[in-house]
Amino acid sequence: MDILIGYLKNQGIRNIVLCTGYKADILENHYAGHFPGVDIVFSREETPLGTGGAIKNAQPLVKGNPFFVFNGDSFCALDLEEFLDYFLKKNAQACLAVSKTDDSRDFGGITLNDHQEIVSFKEKQVGGPSYVNAGIYCLSSEVFKLMPQEDRFSLETNFFPTLLGKQFFGFITDKPFYDIGTPERYQKAQSVLKF
Image (cartoon, rainbow, N blue to C red):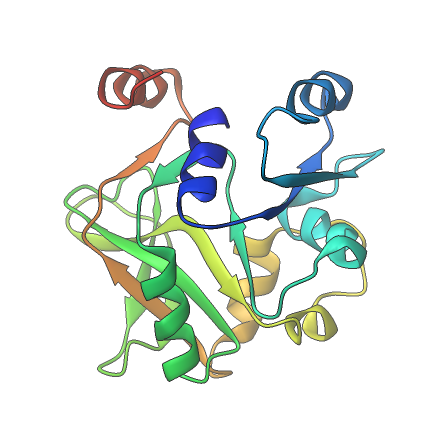
């Protein structure tokens, strides 16, 4: 998280909402005032809400339109200004940063058409090259109106598939994508990123 927030600060981000749940006190105590020049506020989940429920819960604290969303357990150093320009040029409702991988076994694949609209999501693959979700999203505040009524849901499985055909684009990046979702990938990220 320190690496991710430092990267956001260096890209000019000055307002961050951290969605906290498990061990929220530790995270909130650590990040309160930890990054001078960045206003960090907290959206706490009293019960686990899933990735989508966490964003929905944070809506009252979201100031920007559009706004960025970052997964806390992955890192991809793409240029946020370029990503935002792409979102605006496409007149998008939602954009996902997608990264090409030669081995899609651990990730669900994403299919784009010739206009880079997202046309399908595939479950974890047998293997082979594919576009994968790099864990960075640019969203219009209008998406809050399209979210499920439930408080708890997943962005990836319950919400993003409902946006197909609704100005939903993939932003292709060639920047390396690091996911720390398994002990092996965490070890690899430690060897590459400067901790």
